[in-house]
Amino acid sequence: MKVSNLSLNEQRLVAGLSGGFLLLFVVLAFFDLQQMTQWINQGFAWTIDVFGPLWQVWMLANLVIALVLGLTRYGDIRLGGNVAPDSSTFRWLAVIMCTLLAGGGVFWSAAEPMYHYVTTPPLFAESESGVSQVSAALAQSFMHWGFLAWAALGTLSAIVVVYAHYHKGLAMRPRTLLYPLLGDKVETHWLGTMADVVSIIAVAAGTIGPIGFLATQLGFSFEALLGWENNYGLQLAILGGLVAIYTLSASTGIEKGIQWLSSANVVLAVILLAIILLAGPGNFIIDAFLNGMGIYLQDFMPMALNRQDDSWLGWWTLFFWGWFIGYGPMMALFIARISRGRSLRELVMAVAVMAPLVTNFWFSSIGGAGIFYEQAAAGVVSGPLQESGLPAALLAVTQQLPLAELMVPAFLVLTVIFVATTGDSMAYSIAMAISGDHTPRTRQRIFWALTMGLVAAVLLRMGEGGINALQSFIVITAAPVSLLLLPVLWTGPRMAHAMAYEQGIVTQAPRSKVASTESAS
Image (cartoon, rainbow, N blue to C red; front, side, top):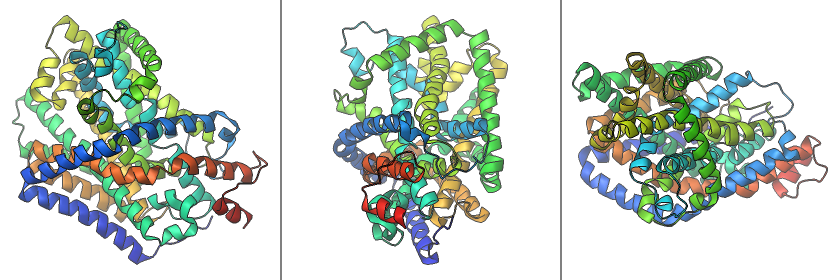
């Protein structure tokens, strides 16, 4: 397969614009964080108001179309052609789970169910169906981290990238999502440049946030457990260790460091879940999971399209949708990179079905255990959560678990590895997006791994306000990215049909001028 080369000037332009924007963000926040935060809050409110309904419809349509493609004859498509996959199915699934769930899922698995348990979400608060607080809390958490979220991170968008890169030889960059609309012109068109830049900025912001939150969480944990002062020096030391881990992993590549770290993470997570189920409140967790899934499936459409409380939606559902949409283009590159040789059905089932079910059970186990202990002793988890925020939730839950002296440090290690798997994969993806190479140079991966760590260090120096400002900024970056992803609702099926025609799965030639003309060539 011949892949077209991008000019060095184009690579420098994308790197300069995306890196320059991140630098400008840091400089403005450093000199006047209060003013910067005010601007971001205004932009956040405007983005939620204007793009919120679009995101809800897009997330739902993306899932439905992906499932239709995966469960019909189009599911037989071999992504990238009839070649052998690069890794075993276990390693492939491990990388997917750890890259997409990552630190965000670890942070929120303890905190979000408890938030919704203490304050019932609007849809269920006004319901007369008699849904229990536990089921409502878990069902709402499942909505935010389940089928819709996962499908947005690498189904239809990955199909477009696979076709443009493996079948048509375009460089592996976010701009390939515009290939069905612009054809080969996308490599030199200004819209392609903007697509690369906004995608890099969005995923960098979305990754730096968890990196910074990990430093604050571990700092909080060390202070609570060991009495160490949770100051900037401690957080910087934690950040330095994390950056060293994921930089080393990114530098060794997908087939080595990234796969090894992800596989080890999955094994550790399974062991910890087994201990919780066998030695902890296993029956409660299983009952809560089944009841929560029942409510989640029963009220899926009302939750997906709920518009009852704009303020609540902005800080919950739409915040998450913006976060995941911002990750979309870069995750499409990463999923396309590791899924060559897999069938489209395997991809859809792994990303849009299996991974959400595993995530939901994870939330039931960690968050459900927290609710169980909260019911036994009110305030044991909700108290630290309300007093100290997100970093306190996981520690509060793990301290109540059996074998707490082992479980607490084990979960802290697990959290570090989860965030590291996000850092290494996104550093790899950004390097791909700038170079256009299937396997970017090692120094490019190292540069972006260190850059994200450096930005997190500067924001930590400003206190929690810097990281919080970045978290809100993530939603703003999703606005242009959502416009980039909008066409995949129809271009994804078109590219799937083109691949199916090339592989003899369907006999009707593609109607698209781009697909049909180039297929003939």
